[in-house]
Amino acid sequence: TDLVFKKNYDHMIRKSHALNVIETYMAILECLDIDVNKKWLDVGCGNGLIANAVNSKRHTNNQWEIHGCDLQNNKIQVAKNRACRNRFFYQENVLNKLQNNNLKETEFDIISMFEFCEHFADPFSLLKDISKNNFKIMVIATPLEQKLNNINDSSPDPVHLWSFSTNAMIKMLKELDLKIIYHSEIGAGRYTKGLDWLTVIAAKPEIHVLFEQK
Image 1 (tube, rainbow, N blue to C red):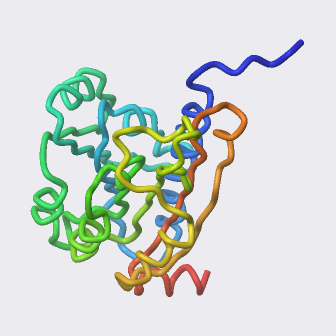
Image 2 (cartoon, rainbow, N blue to C red):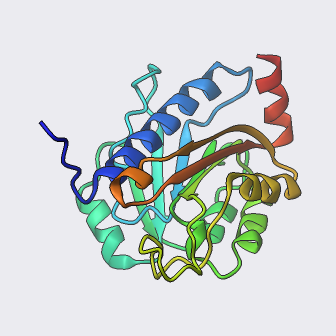
C-alpha cells in the first residue's frame, strides 16, 4: 500500500523531536552535579502545543515547572485552557519574563525557542539579549535553509524573515559565548513538501564544562 503523507506530517515529526529533546535534557541536567530548579521556559509557545505535551517524568522521577510565554493573547488563552498540571502561560515579552526570574532560586534551567527566531528582523540581537540572562541551556529549532529568494520554491513561509543553516546558527551562538552541546538536522520536509528542521542546543560555559566531564 502506498504511504500517503498528510499535510501536517512533517510538523508531527518536528513536534515529536522537540518533545524528545526537552524530556532528554531535563533528565541530563538532573544528572549533572548542579542545583536544578526544574524549570523550563518555552519562548513563543503559541497555543502550548509542545509545552502541554512534554512529560518531565518520562526519564526522571521529578515534576518540572513548565512555563510558556507569547505575545499573542488569543494563543495564550488557548494554552491556558488546555494547560496540564504544573503548566503556566503568560502573554509577556520573553526579556521581561527572564529578567523577573534572574535570581538563582527562580531562574529557568532550560530556555527553548521552537520555530521562533525566523520571524524576527534581527534574530541575533534577540538571542544576544536573551543570552545575558541566567539559564543553563538554550534549545533553538528553526526551519533549515529555506530558499527564500527562489521564486520556484514553494516551501518558504511568507512570514519567515530569515532562514538558517546549522553552521550559521552555531556561529551566532558561539559569538554569544555559548558552547554547543548538540545539533541535528531533520530532513522530513524534503519528502513531504514541508519544512526541513535544524536543532541546536547550547549551554552557558560553566554548564558546558560539566557536560565535558560527564
